[in-house]
Length: 440
Ligand SMILES: [Zn+2]
Ligand SMILES: [Zn+2]
Image (tube, rainbow, N blue to C red; front, side, top):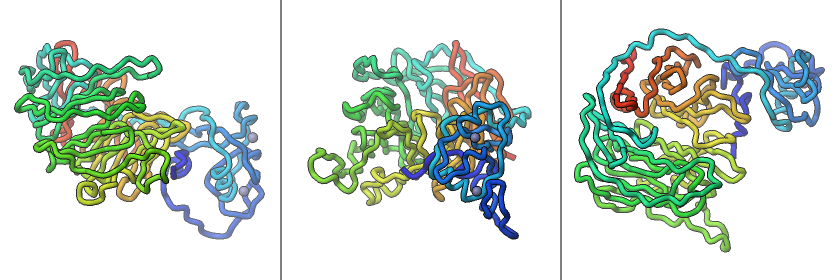
């Protein structure tokens, strides 16, 4: 587990900016002849073994001052600039155990514009995740089964859906709930039970089930069902969990398993080289179809977001999803995530202890590009812009400026079409769609 998930790792407001040291080394207020760290803390953090400490936000971006427990209880404790050595010791030895105050949330709102459609539509989705994009419309899981809803609100029945009943489990915080995923070409849909064990892939043209999904009986209650349709050119391939620690790819035309390999371990023999101690979670494929985000967890428990190179997988690297790369470790999982483009992933929330907001990761360079406070809720990326479903409406965020740039008031979409950019809200007998204006 490489990343500690602390905010300061990459600096608060200008993340990853290299520290440029010009001129002579000065004696810093901490008493050390060293370069300044650009970080302040109370004098009690200047120690060989700094204590756990609190972060008090300064109100500028995510910047904060470090305070020992006693100072954290005071209204306005004195802080001093620390040298790079003090800051490093703090990072290595002491943990941030809590936050005081609030980070800066930037709002630069303008009229979001965009194009609206509204139509009467009596189809009622079973749950929030039961609407998914189709070319030219939407697929809805309703009481009777899968229903196609066109842009003008007209509906046509596609197929009934039958899933094994998930046993009730009082220990689970998240009750099982249905969810629908569609392939980019609209040929296939997966209906799964999030926080459940089972799912099914259907051919939407024939209306028949083509693949039963089962992720085994171990700890499936703790994450959304891991399933995703593969990339644009491989519409007839689905990736899904077949065990708590195993993903597989299937060719839906033939039903053939594309990722044959051995992943099981009895626990007695020496651990196999590619054994994976990780519970897969919600999956999200980037627009190019190469990178697969995995919102799973490990014992601790910790939420561990991983990215898999699925292009390498059927191509010969059969254990590609056994050695995915870690992006972030947080206290939580099953949290909103989105792709801004084919290399930039956005994860909620920030760091540990969590700050409400997003981390932005470049998965190709394997680095956290930035983080900013504010976005909370289901989110989608489109044309490099982040859209977040919040209480007041659909928020538009500029991930470069780290600022909200508009709110589509009163609009709470259930689904997004990544090809057209269109959002759909199906509720109260009405289908409303909103499409952002193309970038200028
Ligand atoms: Zn102190
Ligand atoms: Zn120092």
